[in-house]
Image 1: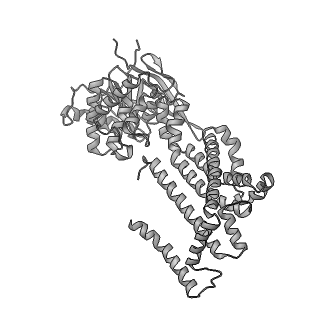
Image 2: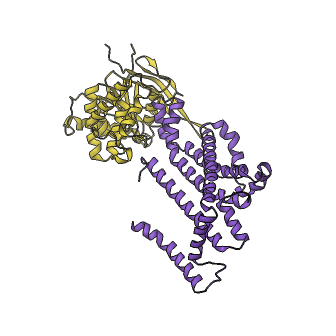
Image 3: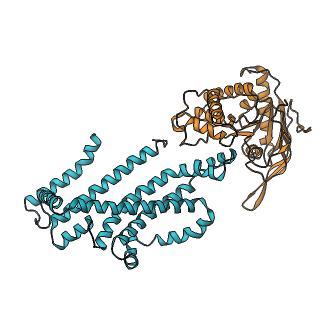
Length: 249
Length: 276
């Protein structure tokens, strides 16, 4: 409890500074609107402009891309980690491709897939895919030799070794990858809405606010992004801790 | 019913390649353990005793010579040979009971029978009540007991132990040695234990083999004709310990002093084997 309170101290302090700065005229209100303005905009957006719908669409897009990317990533990472030939053939190219910043793919994706839903989901999928592949791959390769030897001594078949040894020992690493993918795909969801500004979504709302110079709308969007990101991160940590109870504290 | 677990090692040579150079680690080893026997091998580190154990386990099959269990040559790991390593090597994501059950993963027993064997062996090593604990909740001694239960659960003909108590504190080590002796008396599994601890080798073995390093070979063999359960303070055991110690020290000074220091009370001829 005290931990939570201490964690909240800095954000609250920043909000207070923001409020004070805009109230006492330290900064231009058009650039930094006071909190009550933002709150008012929030209510107005929810009631009159379908803010929750925008949020739901962003989240849905995020989830579709995340699930696709994570599943493809798991499969690819497992194949790379378990089969030496595939590893040697594919991993160098993958490693090269991932050096290209994810945002650099946007022009290509928008030419191939347009700037509608498909393109956005493809972009989010790619963003989620990369950390899952890397961490799954690392996880499968990190099964300790000492336990591999135990598996041999007890005459495990290849399948038994995969399900009882390689997969469980890869789980902490896979969890890290999936956790990163959750964060990356949320960032990518917003990015896709910034760059492919067609259709509803929180990112589109922020861009609209900028174009109309409605800083309250921009600030509101940013607060929502932060809050959603925070909640995603927290729930992922909770699920992770629950799944990996066997790990030493 | 003839008792099983007859181990015969004859003419075993083993060479490793170390940065391209061949390094002979075992040179002409002959050894026999009778069914239900308890053989301990003691030697300085690097004498090839763990390598020998890996050959018997079937984890390393690139060697010359022959290793046979009940007449069959060892070509791969088998559930007939249980194995206990120096570290417990438990699967951290499995409970105690699940870890022990790994030893039965490929056994022909049905589910109910497996469950019974698992809980019987957890009891055997004195861990009743800890079935659902995870390895990180166990002490080093308890974890090693789980490893012993895992090695024994399939009722192997031979249990191979590679310095199984080397990483434990003295008190726990002594207690587990007693436990192992009790288990052996109850199960009559053939035991082959490798150690660098002379005390442990003489206390547990029917016969103690001293190995010399570079290349690994048998330097001396001692019979331990003492009744069980043994007393650690038994003067006869103490004398034997001194003899084994002298033989062991002779192996490490062999490079400095001229060869073959006299070894009292030792049968210096390698045990030759007549497999029938």
